[in-house]
Image (tube, rainbow, N blue to C red; front, side):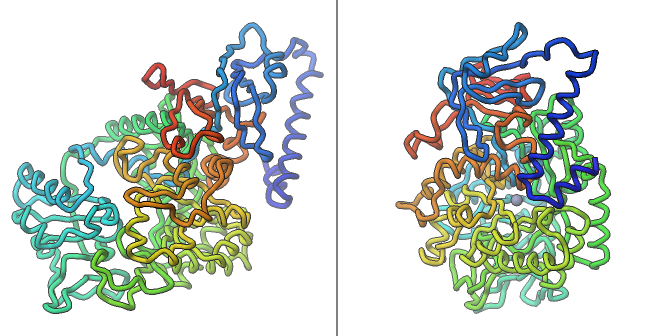
Length: 602
Ligand SMILES: [Zn+2]
């Protein structure tokens, strides 16, 4: 199909869509002049009617009824118009006025990893440093002495005390075990763990690369806090490891739970080669109810020729070439800076000395992983291969560096068609927003972070420095594309998970800018309207993962991925958005979740 691709790359999108429709309708019409198809065309398989169907089309039109044949929508309109097409085999469902939305799309999640986190043992909710210490004390009782005790992604911004547990505290609860308390790229180790890795007062960062061992300014001893710890700390796998079959089962279970909160498509934003076969097995199981796009992991370190070779290999992968809507590689993901939850996001201004984040150097701006020239080289190779480039970029320094690199590469290569992206893009500026809009750079943003982390960020940076923190309204008004996601990394359960993947929490936060354990609203001038919040989790996320021609809105020709919700999200009180319940989820025209049945089907 070279012809449509040629059109797609040389003409504006609206015209392309028109041409494709024209070709489609010509093909459709040709069916009726052939002598073998004299019979009336079959009616739709399914009609949903008497609803408030939010199509999220270009005009944000709302209709009453929708007809589905096979896995696609064939008509959307008034009850009378759509029901007129009904025939004897058409199943009809009276929506009784309920709201219907396009299937929701989470454009940044880590489903497989998340689904396996509690495989060995359940991990309790931890809201304070004592909770963390109690967890390690309990694990020390059951794990043999000398075995690593590891806790990942309990972010200090979300602990009541807003600080790391100290090396001494970890020693006190588990003196006989090496202990690792890791949040994103940073971690605190106890004495046993430091010793095992040869980290003492004389330790220096090898090769001057990224990373940093925090030392007590008085004694010179490591405090236990290490930035980008994975470069120096080797932690063996501990606990019961899932077999391939168990991994497939855990993934399928998680995806059923995603369906129960209305999610029908996701982007795995850091797929490692060993994870891909599990996604393939899920896709081939015959019971898949989730469209999965993969951003393939790309390591930025080491020989540049090897990095380029890895890009080339990803572009050769059959999942990139196949364009299968159920499972595709869309591009690569790499990491440009550390995290705001851990004190290592790369900022334009210094972080400031902070007891909370363990920062002692007043000039410290965070950690940047990829130097300028290498970044441009990686983007060039990725774009030339037709892959989407995205990098984890949290701080305004990292976001700006990535946009500038895109700007440079865009002078040589047609950047826009690979839909370059900034993942997280938490701290921005007016200029960065306008630059993203001008370059066609897309942003995948997680409002749950605003909900969970505002309290700590305010304490660290103050209100004014958060002016362009997740500036969603400005992004929409500038005409840039921002899509909603969760960055789900751990556990099952849409609100107990970390980060919570409930899309209604994301929408509510984007609309209210209200946060946990915090009075007031964070820069309410950046709040989205209801309509924008719905676009954010549907058509915009679809655009980010190259699914907007087939999903993200409810229009004839598109896939019948849709959800029925229990309330009117356009008119309900703001504080009722979060509690929205999905009543039914349809995937490719088939009912895959029903709250009434309290189980997923099939
Ligand atoms: Zn992520």
